[in-house]
Image (cartoon, rainbow, N blue to C red; front, side, top):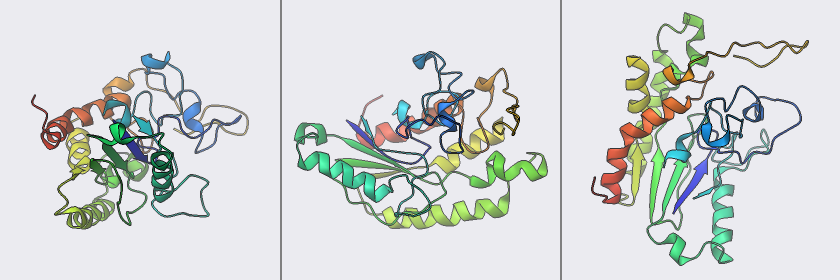
Length: 242
């Protein structure tokens, strides 16, 4: 069984919808979900035009806006709070020993936060490295999306080096290299509404040909390509013959 913890990179709709679109609830509104044939092309709370990372790899505790430590700046449960919720289900027998045997935990914090520690009951953990945040459209808009911001990407490099050092020696933890996967794919290949209700974006007719869906989050095709690149390391780590 797969248990998922993290933020909007893996949130499959755990944040409740609102009556009006906001920066955190926009994933419940058009044009999100327009490529998701599994859910009849409807927005489902996923920050993408379709499926996200956790759909390709279960019990999902992730929610957009989450960080590692509790914060008064967000109403989303922190990573530590999500793990507490998981432990409560274990204590009450809702998640039992059979569920935990050969289970995997995917821990995804998309680069806006940092880690403080991991201590869980799952058999094995998969931890995402930070993606190259200097390549996100939000950070490349000033140069007309022509190239990644190398200074911002230095933050990713420093973060991932520290994370790798922290996880070295933990045999049951696999570090998923989102940095390399995102970088390779990006190198090879809008807003909401104004006060009058007019769209401040245009939706491309072929999101399947692009890696990024909005200023931060990948398309369904982007996530599928990333997980295809990570499939080998994951199966090797789990001892699956392919």
